[in-house]
Amino acid sequence: MDNCLSCRKKNMNKVFTEITPLSDKDCFHIVERYKTEFTYPLHQHKEFELNFIEKGSGMRRIVGDSVEEISDYELVLIGGENLEHVWEQGSCKSEAIREITIQFSGDLFGEELIGRNQFSSIRRMLKRAEHGLSFPLHSIMKIYSVLDNIARENERFIQFLQFLYILYELSVSDESRVLASGSFAHTEKSTESRRVQKVKQYINDNYAKPLTLTDMAALVGMSPVAFSRFFRQRTGRTLSDYIVDIRLGYAARALVDSTKNISEICYECGFNNLSNFNRTFKSKRGLTPRDFRAMYKKNKVIV
Image (cartoon, rainbow, N blue to C red):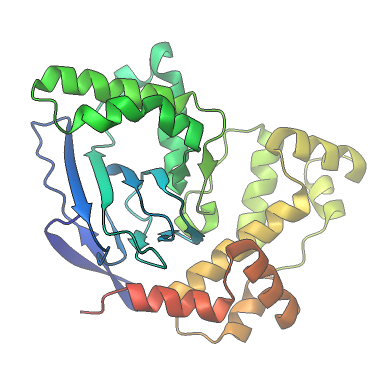
């Protein structure tokens, strides 16, 4: 991530857009570093990035509106040029932090190849990575020996095969976790049934308005009880949880991109009670809205 940078304006703030050293003739760019601290600013880039951190317990990872403290082993895949991210020092005291970063173009495999059956799991993973994906420890350990050596592999074709192996093994991990909300990352799309797509689109278009189970059920011609069960079966979430997450995503984006006060953002994002908004935001994001805004302001570099 320590590469040449340019800047682009985003609403009222400016965020670093990283210009990576990846050339048109290379499949990917790999760099391995040992650090005593992380000082890189909040940034974004169009390339996919697989970032591994070892001995970084206590560091804080920010991906979109997801803010978490990491453990000794960290592996995250980030895709999409609108997804701001950063790893900051936090409470980490280690003097031997190891980082391996692999950056690659989103069109590396081409539409024809990535559309083949053999690439189906990788294709799905890259799509989910638009929100940022965190991988569990057992998935990291499964590919650790390959990841440990890939930066030092001199034979480029062998290195590429190792890279493919890493992507495949991670793509079949059944516990990878999406980090940023779709409404924050501007990637809220659905490959679900038409009924679910219709409801999700309506919620995204009307999140500031009152939204009830009865209204959503009527929208797709189902009874409230049947639709509630249908939505949960298809998405793995309750309708109310989904609505709250969408509203929080838009609220987090407004906190980052505007100078509106927190009360304004609360009501404009569909919450009708400021104390409930503050409580829900902290419960879901780990920080109060005020602290979340301050954290982003600290990590952004105004130029």
